[in-house]
Amino acid sequence: MRPAGGEWYLGIDLGIRWTQVSCYHAGLPEPETKGTAAGGDSCRIPTAVCKRKRTGQWCIGESASMLAEAGEGMYADYLLPRAWKQEAILLDQEYQARDLLQIFLWKVIQMALPEKGVKAVTKCVFTVENITEGLVGMLLEVAGKLGFMDCQVVIQDRRESFYAYAVCQDPALWSYDVVLYSCEGDEIWQKRLACDRKTRPKVASVEEKYLGKLPEEVKEWDRAFAQILRESMAKKIVSSVYLIGSGFEGNWMEESLKVVCQGKRAFQGKNLYTKGACYAGMLMEHREEAETVYFCEYKMIEHIFLKVTCRDEEKAFFLVEAGDNRHQVGKQFRILTEQDDFLDVWVQGLDGKGARIERLKLPGLQASKYRQNRLAVACWMEGEAVRLRIEDIGWGELQKGTGMEWEFEIRGEPSAG
Image 1 (tube, one colour):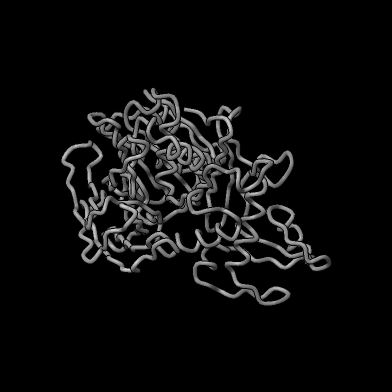
Image 2: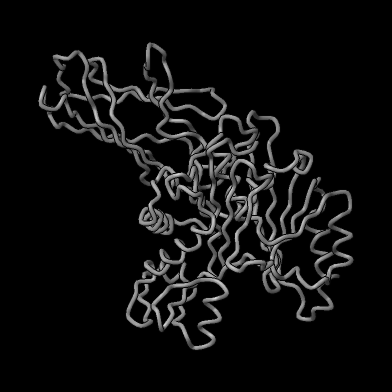
């Protein structure tokens, strides 16, 4: 699967210390990661901004660090956690950390935007270490101020970016399990992607584990990591292995590389999550073509939809699709009903079996002289349930609505974890 003509995907790996940005569009064989320094081999951008003392200009990346070190700029780093905590940061004056994060992200995004700007972006995908409702709300707010509509923005964690990256590679590389090892400093983490191949589409999940620390003596790292590899992949069939993180730099791996490459393909790099975010946007845009669907604790596992008639053809209008992120469920729309004082909502599993109908009764709804009632519907997620609000809005000046409102709760199966 490749981007169609006119599609443009942004993938932003937004970290506490570092951020990376990639774009993916027709004509590129794979997502392209952008950097702030021309000719530089590192695309990791400190999640920080610097304000020049003389001109008041904001800058990021290597130039920001150099200005701060030379005493020519005022520097603010670790913007993501500070924005989350709603900190105020004193530079030449007091700034809200969220405003500085917005400035930073705008400069990052500009490096990967199409010529027509934000409106021409198909999906802008933020990938973060861990998803929380508050963090999602903050990033959606910032993205809105940058000009994105909610339907353009996706917020996911790094497990999902790993999944998207892996399943967009040669199928031979994920015919069995795919394992990723990350090392920052001396800590080793493992992510393992597994697919249930008995389902259509294949259901994928990623398991994450902390595997411990490497020894204090660097000369012991190779032997220790080789043992970690043997133990963590024992009794598993692995197609490919990815090694990411600054801890794997330095050419210290000899014995461990032999373990990694034994009967499987191995890859080492630094920008898997940002590229995976681009792939995730494409998979979401073309979900009907995807061979796999990803589930985790923040994914919806059922379809919730209305059956509507459009040009004499009955279709499903989805309020929620299986695989949607729970924290981004939300729609507002208007419908016409045939004088019925109820609305049928269908709830169906991913496999298309076992559908049930939730009949939402609308007591007091008055029959319209225009033979159809005009209703405004809003849906959102609240706790473990999808909430619906329905309002009789009538036909404007022709026939005013009663303003009556009804609220409903639809509970599905518990999320996959």
